[in-house]
Image 1: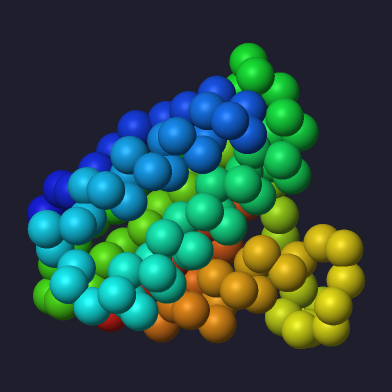
Image 2: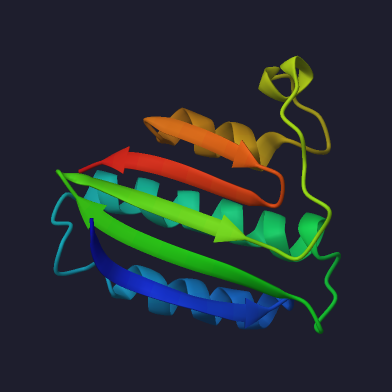
Length: 127
């Protein structure tokens, strides 16, 4: 896989929004399909905001990192926060509308695969 984007941002919603815009703009020359572009932006947004809000509890002293790699017609989106992490359970896969977990369900629905590794989430999206 080749390098596309890597960086981190403090756990602040305003900072994260600007960071997400920067990250997704780096993909404009790679993704021409508007629907796929929208899906990727939503995946990145949901994972980053989960890290900021749930992982790091909006603690500005903690950072959320994003890495985007491209290869074999797919993007690998990796987001890591400094929180305690989550362990995947069968309940996490339930698509019932509840207060927590909807962002991860959106990511699962839009991605080809999603891997949870404690405080790191990796989403793969074909383009």
